[in-house]
Image (cartoon, rainbow, N blue to C red; front, top):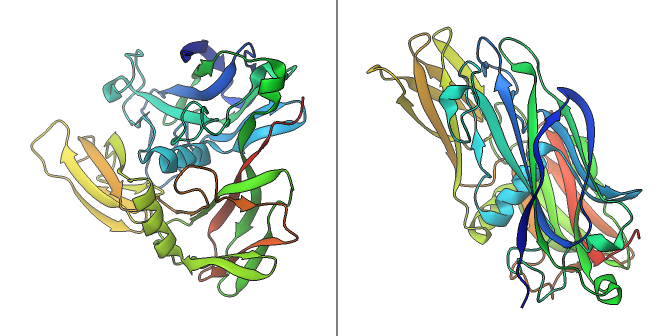
Length: 382
């Protein structure tokens, strides 16, 4: 019986405020999963979240990739990385979102010290088979001459954003011992890569050709559709999967979301620790069906809030601290086609067919839509 190992690959690795960092990964063992933790210090005047895209590690990490040369196994934004992990585990990965003035790093989950911190889980095994023992799905890293973690960041450096030169990364790997080469060549890999970007229109259907490959099975199909202030199921109203021209999967956006929430036993919670600098602050939470709870952080004053879609407006006395917790009954702004609900990998959608199409029905213009495919395939690229 083998024992999984948790290994810290990088500790307090300084990243550039804006640019691309390539971090080579150890390949002596097979990789079950990675956990990338990014943190950054707030500016001298704190970090404003008022009516702007969140200046958090999630939103300011435009790309995370795992690659070996030209072979790309994972490629998604920081936001989509965390959303995929949320669907896998039912919980939003750990995070500290704070507007406090940047101070001395005091560890995770301490918002008063003024550091943003977020985890980005990257899994190579499924939740139902967490070590790949039954399905043989794992990253056989020893097969490859190189394996890199690539991170693209663009942090807002300002007194009301992130302090320059304070972006750090910790990278952990959960591993299993290597096997004989022939055994590792028989392993399968779990990949996630972006298939399409799209801006929704007012009406009509839009069709997307999905990847066709006789060596791949489509396990999950993630569709993310977000527009500031817009509720769920408005910009994209219906989804359909066509296999060789036949309607195999179809339903309303909300129906998919409710099923997804059941399948992953969703318990979504997003926490903010902030203050109102001018008596009113608009949070673009990126949670279209936001349900908010608020409490004072330092006084007996009672802040109030209103909501329009994902926008939560908090009114309070200027410079008084408050806690804001945003929950959601569904995966925010995302719907998932899940072709492996039991995790046994016996009923996935084969990608070696003649034609495989995703069809979206537009209901409103202006949503930023992403389509990400998760495949299971034989290991390749070595």
